[in-house]
Length: 129
Image (cartoon, rainbow, N blue to C red):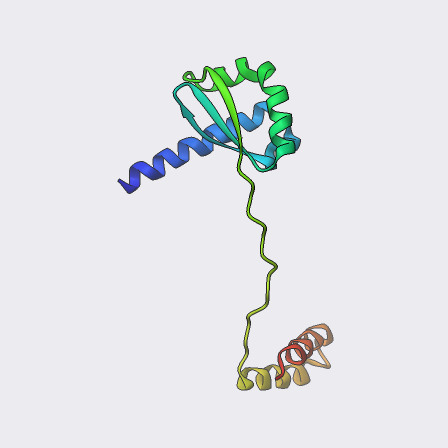
């Protein structure tokens, strides 16, 4: 079962890559191929602007898309907004022992490797409690 799903996933990725060779490069990050269902190639657009642009150019591109997949009779574009990305937060917590070790290493490296010593000292400063 899992092998079949992985194989199907690879097929969709390959089809998506082929479709992206036919459609304009500026649209590539804004859509992905979902499936071919009852003769309809389903493309998922990340926003309304990408969907509008795809709908505008797809009639002219249909013959090229049909050449990529024999089962395609028409193309449907659906808008599926990407969820907003959460800002990254630094959850790194260093122990006092680790901070002491970095501080000692920074002091020892000061003469030979001042840039590394400065980076270690900054790390200690940022994570000191």
